[in-house]
Length: 320
Length: 279
Image 1 (cartoon, rainbow over the protein chains, first blue to last red):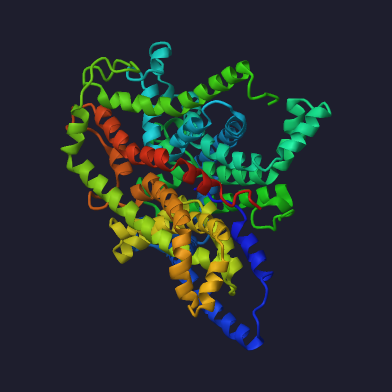
Image 2: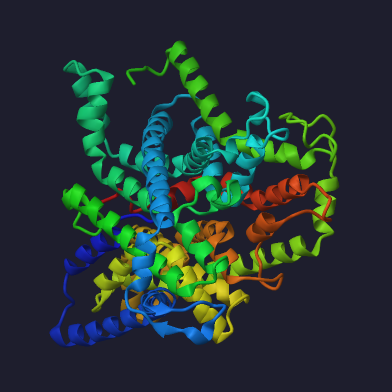
């Protein structure tokens, strides 16, 4: 999912600067009507969010404290934190966690470098800019499952044009290292355009005059990139990295299609899914759900601490 | 970067770079397209371009209930979820962009949280809840989570668009005696239509793309969507090689997205990046 940073917060700020109405009586009456309308308009969104996320996550926490196997529903009892102990003591969790972190870190780093190059290209190119900007949306828009099948078929021995380039009897999707590389490749292919578009929007804010002035002063292309462009793009970079990191941590579709999580390539999302639909264990599955939720929350907090004031949700400085 | 517009050598380099990007974006798509046109005996030849062409794969998937019902489910569920998410999102975004009321900051913060929420964390509890209330394996059972996860996208994109709208018109309508609700309906909605439309495309792409909820919260053809049908597809018969059919189904799933991208490229880019860095 792709969400941007601080628009509504900024709107909030503007709101409070709005000039007051003509008379006090009118104001208070108008204010009350405005208040009620605001609450009314937001109510459906708030209700559905609570129903579909807040309540289930609370329910997941409660389930995670139960012994609850779907095959033996009668044996449901309160077991405290023992599901967490089971998960955290199991090598499956740590294996999946390691794989997920590996995929997340490597794919986000590659996506950032490629995405920045792509953004610079789209920003500066003199040739076929419209064409490049259009085709780049295809990987973004295409269904992940479809793209994953394309990658899977390409690397399947006998069938694939890429597998045909490899020595005989190699099956890259069945080996840990090469399978992970293909999963990362599929992730990178699909999401680099999104990263590039977010970075492009940040790039558009860097004034050309400043770059020209730096060039006159003798700054080379690399210096201009690292000393001027990247620092000025910091808010856009933060948003792009934050959302992609949290998104990559949830990786599921690509792995499900490419390897089914075999040979130790399963992510934490795969583990949670398998626990529910292969082991039918809701208690353990819910404990995994809650742990993933905590991981994502920690990642988000880490990001916001690292980037400090330019994090989404805080006030944009230098506005207007 | 220090290029001037007239330099022919720079144009060549930009051209080469552009070509690389175009190939990057298109090769996986062309590959699945190529597979979908291959005949059964050439599908395992590993050639990028088919040696012999056929439409059999397409004919076959349309003769299969699993696929046609899945396509119907995907279209129906995605459209309903998109309409509802956009309506609910528009209301909330308008309130957030324009009105002063308690709890606004909380809603904005919660939206941001939902955008980062790991969907897999909801799979176990939603599975259990939906089975208990009879929503499991139904259209609403998928539409509800789709709306929820599309809402942050809708709220953020729309409120960014709403900031650009000339609000004096609304004030003028109110001076002419319109209530806030009337001002919203007859003045702002038409002005906001392009933003709403862009949001609808992004939300539709999101719903169309979903796999995790679809595979967890459905079990039969009643509500299974196309992504799940493709993933579970094992061939028309036990002995048939499913690759061609999967490829054909994959191409069909991709066509609406490609049409959107070609028609609304500018809007999609504007929607994706709105609010991201305008601050």
